[in-house]
Image 1 (tube, protein in one colour):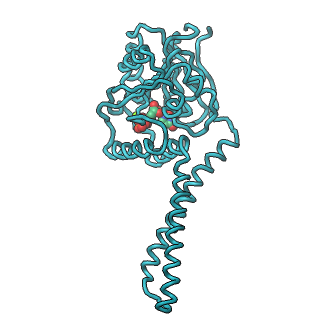
Image 2 (cartoon, protein in one colour):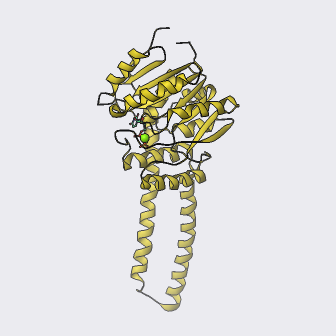
Length: 313
Ligand code: UDP
Ligand code: MG
């Protein structure tokens, strides 16, 4: 393996035994066809199935271009990619999912864009092959993220992206525990662009993201790149206190003019419930930030590596 190949491909793998064979069968020929020196860095994110064994086998078959990082537990897709970034040596770095939802044949297009001088090539899934719920929810989150962060991406969810060595070095200098790689990379990009890519249905196995994981991930995206939710809250709180002050004055005047009143009980309940809900939401939001600060200050290792399989230079 040349000490710094032209391209590094980073692939996080978590319980993908059913799809790995098909991935290998398409990925290697697609990369061989590019005519660039390359390395593929698979990161096994603590799979409990045969994925690790299959990656070992694949390493035996193509040790010249394959490296395998084996985590000792499940640290999440974005940590797996982070570890891949720290291990890789390529001039350009491409991230890809292991489930063949991102066709490996599209890698060439991303690299052609990099050659034009862009340092970040994002991607937009031409026709997204996911459940209707996922598509709509992610459209909504895209809009929220566009408004409250400075990250500009048409399609935040697609992991098929290419980054320059400078961006990878910048990411490697970060110590963030909860992060969202495409957004973090974007925040370091000088000259980003986007292209359309094909998207396929998951080749085999199931999505590793349940609804709860998706919610957590979107919180990472928002809290990691903006404090605007907190600031909105203080503005909202200010407006409400101005309104309630006016309301109290109004009630005081009525008390003086009309005397004691006891009507409007349910309106009062309505208002109180609304404010309680708002307060709870605010506390929850604070909790999201505080929880992340807590994880960050403990400074535990972000992931633990069992072994790295690579050919001795
Ligand atoms: N993945 C991972 N660790 C996890 C969850 C997922 O490394 O904890 C990998 C998974 O193997 C796949 C990629 O991240 O290569 C994307 O996961 P998935 O396809 O399940 O997500 P979806 O496409 O449904 O958003
Ligand atoms: Mg997928």
